[in-house]
Image (tube, rainbow, N blue to C red):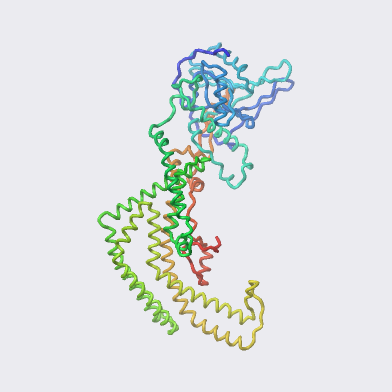
Length: 630
């Protein structure tokens, strides 16, 4: 091949933004607008023209004349221009470059046509020279874009060389020229519309496929953008990085050091995971504690987060990369808040102040509970209770309070040391400290939990007895084998004993129900406080902070779609549009990139919660094995 060269003027500094005609955005039903094709005139042998969409990067609007390199999408009759090849060049080297990019990015690139930028006077020889390049780089259709000197006028033409046999000339199609910001499209991630989230991928309309083809083409052609005008390559290109490839010494050093560090930390984390999976921790007491304590659950979650962050495997998709970034930012924020809490606790000896205030608070709570029990053992709210049962229950609970106070005073000399070591756990993150706080509240209110369990079991026993005796009066019984209520005949002695037992349970029920109601309210108060702590910890763990930061600082990175603004719309001239990216709404960012939360806490609906409270079923702060999700 011979060397093709052509002298061109110096590169200008103009951009499309300088020639954009201001105007309101155009609301287009189809994300990629189309115009109806004009058919051939009757009796003419000319090929009927059709509308082609040419996506042209704004960074190439001021480039020198050359060849248009990009991808042709025949399904949508679209041409995505990626770069402009300048003179001088050798055709075989251009083809080798396109083959290398195609092999690296797995995208079919070709020379789509020619680009002519007439900076001064029109040059007829340059136009004829560019038209002759179609014989070397054969492509169907062959695009010819030209920008007039010193004006806003553009001329676009698409020629099809394969015409029907006869004296007819090659057909020329109409072109719709769509400008796009190449850098934003390359860095953005297109999300499907919200109406398509529940559908299959094949159900998406053609317009969504058009946009996906444009974004996918630019993303896969990233190896084409690794060269700039300062390089010594055989081919000189114009694209969004022509003036210099974006790079940072700190970023490159971080990438160089990240490999060994991640490998070392991943090995250490694998050893910790193997040690935690030892059979010793699967024995009954340890396995029960590991599954019920919030601290153990949070440590397991933190181990999973660190394993994901320091994994040496490359992310296979943008969603996995975004999840890894969100996890990293969440852990960094968690550790930062934990260190702030740790510094606040160790400043001015606040841990000692908390330890000194804990015993008086415990004594005050015990006195309030004793006063409450004394009130229940009398005539609460003017109600007449069963005195014998009231005294037995009251003394039983008072004895438990006495045991609890003795336990607190026995642990008083060690409370400050315990709080000091608990405060050190904040260096692992604020969520770990919150989990330890939740477990500490559970241990300090263990007597309230015991009161609730005793009252709930006694109340549930009486409710079950009354329901069984009520079926006896109606001549029914519960069939355990078939799990249903069947008819049954009872004799006189059974009915007499059932009547006595039913009467006793009915008259003892108000006393039991009152104790159950009081201690259930106390238990719900403790569970509510623990639930708020768990909610705050789950919020820190699951909030996609990195995605929200991208949406706030660089909204084009998360694209929900595009909109078009009319730049030029004149008769006899091609329609020129500017494609702008619509950012993803914040609600969809949260729903799409929210990290999975902890699944160890129960999720009851109001109906199931009221049913459990009415029948005296226990409400655990953790999820039971047989629980059903409402």
